[in-house]
Image (cartoon, rainbow, N blue to C red):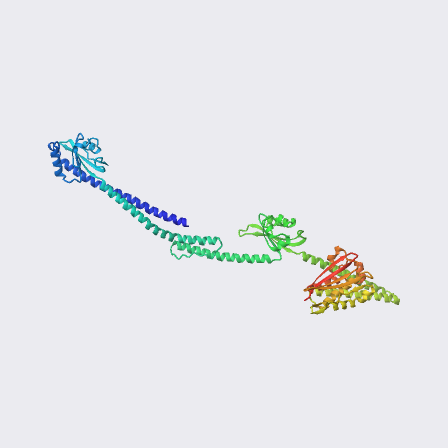
Length: 587
C-alpha cells in the first residue's frame, strides 16, 4: 500500500507541476509577445515620424541637415536611429559612425522596407554585441522610395525580464512542490489509511481471524465500505463458529460411535472414516482416505454393495463377512448421499459389528443343545430303570436296590447339573453379591484340600500344600475364592491317574497374589486349550461323564475369577499334566 501512496502523491504532484509549468510558459509567452508588440509599435511610430521628417531630398541628401533633423524629431538616445539610402549605404546612425558601418542592403528589414513594407527583424547586432529589434520603414516622396529609416532597440531588458520571470516561475514551482508534497502526502494518507485498514482486516479474515474489525468512523463512502466489511466479518465469525460447533459435534459423534461410518464420493473414493472403521479394517484412517473403496476395504462383497448403491442410488441393508484383519460379521446399511439439488453425490456406509452377537447366538444354540443332551442322559437312565422296575424288576431285591442306586446317582447328577447351571447364570448376571473381607490364603487352601481329601485318597493322589510362610492375606470374597479352589481341585482329581500328584503353590507381590494348581494328569491337547472354559465343553466326553462332571466347573471358575477382578490362564502338555494359574488383586 506504500507504493500506491507514493504513486498517488507523485501523480498529484506531477499534475500540479505540469499545470504550473504550462501556465507559466503560456503567461511568459504572452508577456514576451506583449513586450515585443509594444516595442514593435514604439519603433514603428518612431521610424515613421522620422521618415516623414527626412523625406525631403534636400534634407535626406545632406548628412548635416539630416542629423539635425533627426535630433529634432528624436532627441533621446534610447532608440538607435539609422538612415540608409536605397543602395544600402548608411547615411546616419546615432550610435555609430556611418562611415565605418557596412552596407545594409542585404538586411531583411531593409529589403522589406525597399519594397514599401514595414520591415521587422530580431537578431544579434555585431556592432553593439547584443540582441536588437529592428523596424524599418521606407522614406518615400511622390510614391518614390529613395531611402529607409530604421529604428532599433536593445532586447536585453526584455530578455532580462523574461529570465527573471522564468526564475520566479521556477522558484514558485519549487515552493509549490514542497508545500504540495506536504499537503498531498497528508491527503493521500487520509485516503490510503482507510484502504490499508480495510485491506488488513480482509487479509486477517482470509487467515480465519474473524474477530478483526475496521476502526474507521468516517461517514463517507469509505466509512460505508468499512461498515460493510465489519458486518461481513461479524457474520462470518458467527457462521464459522456455528460451522465449527457443528463440525465438533459431528466429529464427537463419529469418534465415539461404536459403529463404523464411511463416506464414499461419486468417484468411488473414500472421503471420510471414523475410528470404528479403522478398528474394523485394521488400517489407519489417513492411509485409506482418498483411495478407491475396493482398494482400501479389501472386501469384494462390501465393495460390490457400495458399487450397487452408487449405481442405483437405492438404500438397503446387508450382512457382510470380512476376513481382514480378522474374520468378522458386519450388519451394513448402505444409503446414497443426496445434495441440496437432489443429485446423488456419494454413499454413506454404516457398519455394525455383529460378530459377538452371532457368536453369542451360536453359543446359546449350542448351550441349549448341550443342556438338552446333558439332561437327556440322566433322565433317560432314570426313565429306563424306573420302567424296568415297574415291569417286575422290583421283585428281585438285589436288582431293585441296584436300579434304585443308579436312579439316585443319576438324580444327584441331574441335581448338580441344574444347580451348576443356576449358579453359572447368577454369576454371569452378577447377581451373587460379594462379601469382601480379610482372608488368610493358606488356611483357605487347607480347608478346601480337607474337603477333597476323601476323593483324593480313593485315587491314592498326593496333594502338596503351599508353604505356610510368609502369611498371605488378601481382601476378597471367601466363598467365591473357596469355590474357585474346590472346582480346580475337583478338575485336577478327576483327570489325574491313580497314584498321581497335585501341587498347590502361592506367590505374592505388592499388588497381586498368584495361585497355581498343578497336576500330573492326562493333560489337554494344545488345540483344545482355548475352549476349555466354555460351558459343557469336554476334552474327553466319555471320561467326563464317567467322572460325574457336569462340564460347567471351569466356566464357573472363569466367571468367579472375573467377578473378583482377576485373571485365569492354563498351561498343559498332553500326557504330562496341567497347570491352572489364578491371579487376584490383594485389595
